Length: 258
Image (cartoon, rainbow, N blue to C red; front, side, top):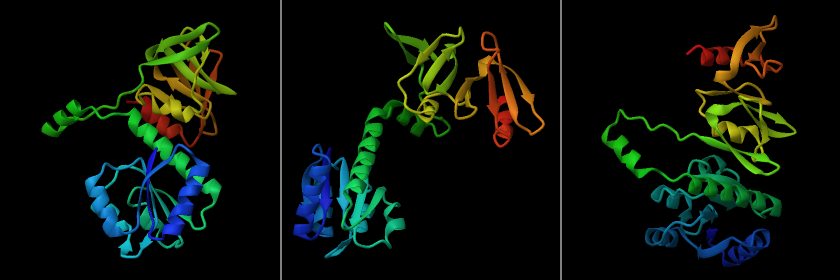
């Protein structure tokens, strides 16, 4: 991961570079920029790095001037002795705000956050052809690309399951995918939130922390006295009851009654 440091004190910049190397040896410092003027020239002549570590108060101004001139898409981690700029920092793509002297654990978390953001950005390339069509036809809506197949883990390897054949996802110590024919497979996702983001929300509903349910397998909905809902699922899942809380019940009803 290529990085740029913006810091007007040479000794501070050098010590900070050493600290970054101790925290993450894969971060490569490609340039250290000592002023707003130098940074403006550098960003005008070079491709943006994967992450920027920026002090705020520089000898010839504040680093916000750089990011107002160049609207960078890479994460920016602000490293400063002043806490009054925090709100402004997050308006210019700042992902973290570290106060000097920088705590090693805080720096490690910030770098990890930058790495995750870059990974997500690289994993979702823009379809330029669709984008151009949308620009030419302002009424065109670009639909998100939801996952079509999930891989279930089995003793002999992986089993590909089409999304339309999935009855629900369930968290039970680990995350499971359960098919409409009641086959059950662990999936390689750490959280239900990650799975939810990959699914078409018009087809799947996050009922609670344990269940994401396919609309196709909902048999009926039972309303309890406390306004809580119980989803009854179609066979062979008829023995499973899925709770909908009183708070989520109105939103679920709107989702179901489309």
